[in-house]
Amino acid sequence: MKKVRLMTTAALVAIAGFTTISLTSCTKDDVVCAVGLEGKNCDQDVREKYYNSYVGSGTAMIDGELETFTDWELSFTERGTDPTGLKLELRTYDDELVVKGNAHLKTNTTFRLEETSMPGGFIYTGDGSVNENSASLTLTEDLSGDKITITFTNMSK
Image 1 (tube, rainbow, N blue to C red):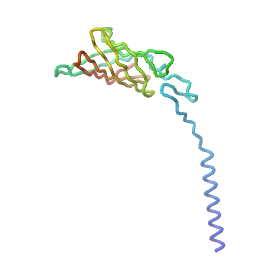
Image 2 (cartoon, one colour):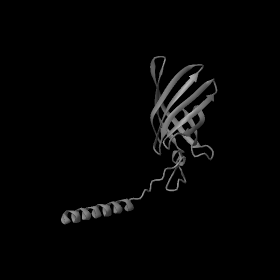
Image 3 (tube, rainbow, N blue to C red):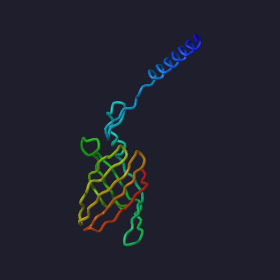
């Protein structure tokens, strides 16, 4: 019985020692930052990586036919001090402005275009994703209740 108690005590001491070493040697370096910020101290603005132009093609179903929009340019610039604020512009291949509006980051890599009115009565909304090298955009164009969704899935810097 004395041997069993001695072996049980030794096993418990070994387990306690291993647990203590495991718990004290593990540190959590990950910091959870607010949307739009990153870095060890949450002091880096993620938007700075996205101030670029991204070029790509999109598609939309218009009057039952698949239309393609080739070499359109999506660009982002800074909008104020809010780390989620972006200015968004979408231009055609021949540099005609389609949309110019405000967007905001929903996460550090996804954004939403706020409702934007453009000349001619067009109203635009949209969602997309962005990183240092590529962007995507799903844009809804509304003209007096007639809605068209244009999808740009792979725009590159």
